[in-house]
Length: 331
Ligand code: ADE
Ligand code: ZN
Image (tube, rainbow, N blue to C red; front, top):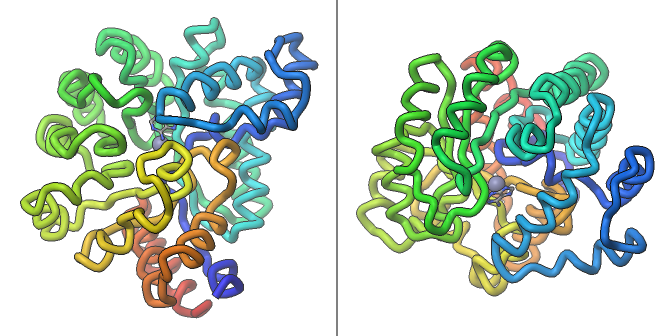
């Protein structure tokens, strides 16, 4: 089964590029850029990755991102993730980035996007990996600040396929960002949002009805509303689920309690994603392997999860058909 998981071509739809910053690269960039990190060693830093909830992770994640300064740093960050894609047989990836995490520190929007973009272009050239970039607004900041970022993004409209919403979910509901999502839709951006990760399913309703999003990131709390489950099934709204993340951030106490199999068995369009793999103990394949080892995922389940990610990707119908045929061939 593990060989089978590794062999399948996969798509990733929920990956924060800042969350793929491995401790080794963090230390290297800290040294190069003269940024202090409050840990003595890679081992000590890794040991600090012991989270109690989303906020406890975000504190460390935003602190870590401070080592990213130059366009080359963003290139190196993204390139390391590209190499993980090769290792994990990810042939298409749609990556999130958080511009405000960097512009707040005086880094230019262009520095960030150009570094990411160049690495993704090289990924396609060297490995044939296709990709897209989604810019997320930080929901702990105001809608006004999101609008300022949105204005900056317009210059890079051709490089950014969509907008998303991430960071501290509790007390920052989707309704806080209704107007900026409307503006993004008007400009033709695809829309996604983190919803129902830690907060209850009412956030998923808001994301669907007020923000008009096309995919829900996480969405695991939908299980608590039969009516919402039915709607998600009828409309086949994709849920980009991140199993390791949910365990590391204590959304579920253990893998035994993770509900991905129930969501899948009910007929929802769920996929497997790695979220912040450098912080959550593993990339795409490890997420599948953990599910297989803990909740007895069948081969048919794995195939469905993998196919769902391609079906839900922001790519043409032709490319979807090509990738789905590659999955069938690998099976
Ligand atoms: N930013 C990075 N990872 C996140 C997550 N799992 N939830 C919300 N915001 C995030
Ligand atoms: Zn996420």
